[in-house]
Image (cartoon, rainbow, N blue to C red; front, side, top):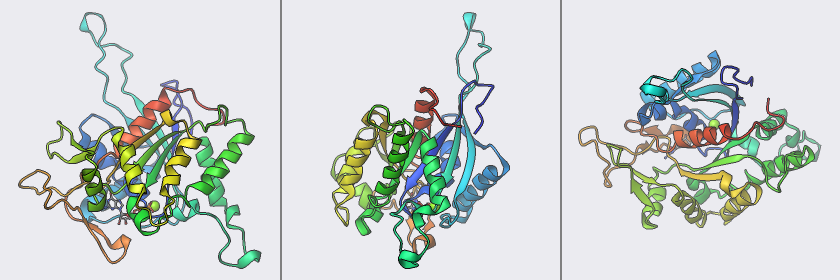
Length: 336
Ligand SMILES: Nc1nc2c(ncn2[C@@H]2O[C@H](COP(=O)(O)OP(=O)(O)O)[C@@H](O)[C@H]2O)c(=O)[nH]1
Ligand SMILES: [Mg+2]
């Protein structure tokens, strides 16, 4: 991606990472709605026609069609710019400062089919079949992780109850990434240089919400007219920890430990995220503990539908946090 000459600072690559079905594509699809609903003046604009089309189509599917995105088979690349509100900075005598431009965060994002994060072991074809770790898409995904300095890492607690394979989708690419960065000198102080926004997804699911409630982790935002429950700041790490205790295979606690082993703990932040949010009755306009499910499950994941309006929770925040942290650090070697 080209640096933005008008701002004199480079754009940032943010990579999405998560098991299949963990909610990566839905999170991207909810970004526009999340920004528009959040009222803090940020907007998202496509940086090329394909990226704009994608935003428009996915937003429309979620808002009008009430359907989740189809599982992606291809490696999709998007370039967007997040444009912030004009700064209120004023010059001497209260005159508007001429340099006051809205902040911009360029995002280059790859949305990959989840299977690519897996172990890459040979299955079809036996030992003589093609080696999946040589899959060019897998290589491109690793290139992307290597060049990104921001990662949105999705942990899906529902999938973890059922399959318990989050660790299997994390450890192989992390190891390959570490191997590459060790070879290129990117492993300078014993940790990888990335900032990582860890999103515990599907926070709207009753099992997740009730876990947060039972641990006393819920709060509400005074500015939120619907009074939707949220998990604030550092409590999201505890929610992750709590949910990882009920993993089907017991390996989820390894995810947390591995993250903190490979990345600087002060560059990791946790978010309790829901792309669709909770159902809110249009008349009462208030969260109701007796009727909050916004997801209407189908036979298969992809047949599920969205019941009411979208109220994304912690969809924008991980992106803005990454963007702001990355803007404050010098561009890393090798980032194009
Ligand atoms: N309850 C709930 N389910 C979600 C949410 N986002 C996604 N899902 C479900 O998870 C499935 C997979 O999501 P998707 O975004 O395609 O995952 P990806 O494979 O990581 O891109 C969807 O079809 C939905 O059934 C969410 O915010 N809440
Ligand atoms: Mg997807």
